[in-house]
Length: 447
Image 1 (cartoon, rainbow, N blue to C red):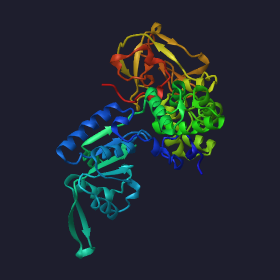
Image 2: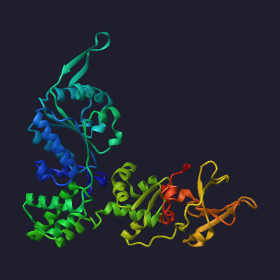
Image 3: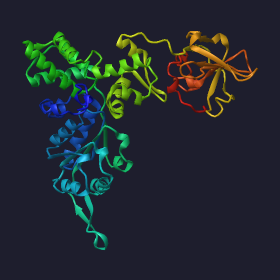
Image 4: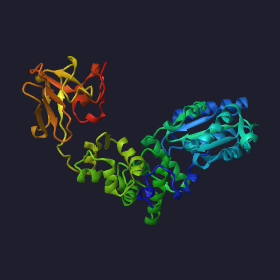
């Protein structure tokens, strides 16, 4: 079994989440968080009930574990109709979808999880079903084939996806109620944990709920999973209630630290920090070092690290941030060229050297007294193409030239716009020139 599939802090549903259903809220008023989504859904549900019509089709978009399935069940319950659930990969052929749709009654809710993984052929069948409540099927083969229309009961389709970008435009446009779910705040997760503790019948102090909530990665599913495991530790220890100390001891044993990182996250960061000097390093190299498949690294490990500001994905590879080194308790290597510019925007010019001509790199010309080099000179090297040509200064580690002295104006310094965090030259601030995020800048000409 892949080690990543056993992680407590994975937001995806696991086989041992069987008791999750007992923690699910049953009504919209019991659902915690997602205030805007709940408020809008309440209005749409009330209006549909008043008209005695099916609710318009709903699309839930958001990361796993935020309550898309729970909200779909609540919608059906609030409407007082039947709820049928399936998932995109399960509907392999048109006949599977036809069987589901023809068994629906008036105003029923059909929930399709991972709707972005629908077979394209099945998706085509779904369009008229959503729009006209009809099935267009081809019966027979060859010359004997004929088209048959089947009328369907007016139903509500609720789709859920973690990857809205993979939905085709025709399918996305047929959902009248798009709902985006966001990560939970720490306070909202505390409420989730406190409610879960009441359902499970175990005492919970406010600081105990906070300790679990702040390690739950903004995800209720992870909060519930951690709560159940902490409850086990508390039960064995003979504790009548979960306080901060009990929760902390349990989570330390579970290898989930104060930032919500587990052993796999820390192993990933430590490997880059100690073996590759903090990066940049290619994802294939990391995958080989960790003995993990590339897709597991890109889809399971890295998203949360990027979200927490511990990791950068750059064209040259993965790069740890200063925050990552502080979290690991390691000294950050002095390997970045950093400089500060305090001048206002004077003018923008194209660099006409052989390096920059083909890339369209722009430079900001500033007076030398407005330029301060913060890195040691041993981090830099210079190169002159010919006598009298521009003198470029390069970073030894990445090869990028953050600034240079132009031949046309040797009393000025040209700062590489590629080194900016914000390419909007009309609003340049000194902070944008700290040189820490070169790869994030756009390589394009500024109008």
